[in-house]
Length: 315
Image (tube, rainbow, N blue to C red; front, side):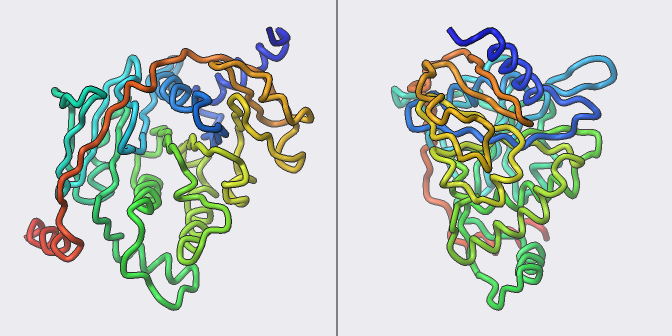
């Protein structure tokens, strides 16, 4: 059993992470978790508990969950779920037995702005990136200009859609709305030593979005297997750090936890959490994360076809 002081501190820091008050701003939290250490179950637990203050009461906070081909959003308790799929993509969702899920709430979007305009407040909004992603041309030109890129890439990874989505949320959301983005396996978008052109996109995102996240009321919970996978510029901005069993704790420059093997002593269902020079231990409800939903994608049009379809839809 961990000392009562550490349990109390863990509960306090966790409450600060999942509850946003009018004066508290937003959070950037990172979870370090080796495979099989309970990361998905913790994300499910956090997503179900996010809340923010309206007057004297707490209401359910809107969650944006980055959809994965094998996922567990259906296990989130006490929240309705809306799934956002690009209008040119064809997909079905099946359970572990291969049976197709029915009665899902699905919205088909064209642009990132469509998601913002139709997001379900108080719900968990699961966003799947376009299978053939073409970045907004004006945004692409802006990034290229601000990052002094001589050549503007014609095509970028579909994982970069999250950059565009968060940027448009920052620009167009209502000022009084709180949102939490939950991004699993975030090394795809915040890689350490990222190659060109991803390194330029990451730098633009840090300058354009992460810098003002607190006042924009946009929180992020991102996950990695190891802190050494995370862009150091992002690591410096992390306000809350969470370590699951057997996680590697960063050096003193990034963490005040002196006993670097402390995460090795954790049991499944426990985590270390630190913020502003304090740390503690907390627990979460375990769920059967082997009970996954799998996205079954069918053929999607190529980018050239997509551009034609989008232009026709706007006539």
